Structures are given as structure tokens and as C-alpha cells.
Amino acid sequence: MEFTQIKETCLYVRDLHRTTHFYANILHLPIIGQMPGRYVFFRVGSSVLLCFDPEVSRDNHGLPPHFGSGHQHLAFECQPEDYEAWKEMLLRSDVPMEHEEIWPHGRKSCYFRDPDQHLLEIIMPGIWGED
Image (cartoon, rainbow, N blue to C red; front, side):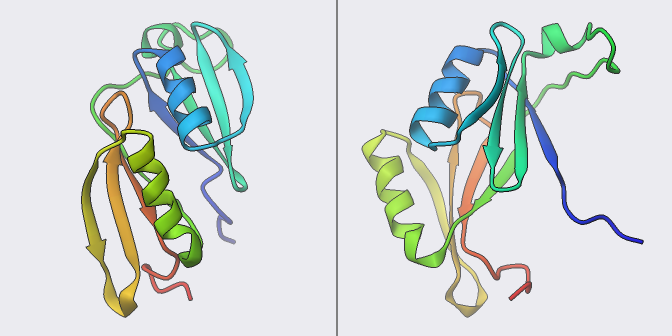
């Protein structure tokens, strides 16, 4: 018996409007659920990125309360042939790249921040030996 994937990842954000603009318009993630002032959900491949206002989700009705603080890290995998285009798109959108790493076997990743300063990464497949 084993898990097949991480289905949901959650970030807590201060400004849902700003978060929606960043993830939908800059990173081109489709919105699959939204309640203004409460949350916005994005599709990422077969996974879901949940973005909640922590002050609202702290008093959730029905589900267990959840909230958090601090900066988190997420990595978005892209095909190697799309990697440079993603970097260019970030630059055109005035999203500064903090660091680029060249991993074993020539795989690359670049790091940048979202509006809440969560550390994001665009990463090529194979870094964790899955290829």
C-alpha cells in the first residue's frame, strides 16, 4: 500500500486578489474554485494549489480550522524544452529571479517569489532521480 501523489498543497496569503493575478495571469494556472475574501484554488497538472486567507480559514465551518504563517516553498515542474521560455516569461512579467541552479545531469531550476514572498521554483524533471 502506498500513496500515489500529493493531491493538494496549501499556501496562506494576505491578499487573494493579488494572489489570483499572480498565479492565474503570470503563471497561467487555471482557477478551479474561488470564494472572494476566502480562497482561490488552482489546477497544477493533476494536483491542486489551495490559497487561503489564514484569518478566514482559521474559523472554518465544517472542515477542521487551518491557518499558518511564514514563507513556504513550492516547485513547479516543466518540460526541459519549456524551461527557458518560463524564465523569459518571468522576466517579462517583472518577476525577479533569485537564483538559478544547475543540478546533476544538466537539469536546471530557477527560484523566484510570489507576492507573499513564498519561494517558488521552476524545475526540470529528473532532479530527484525519477527518470
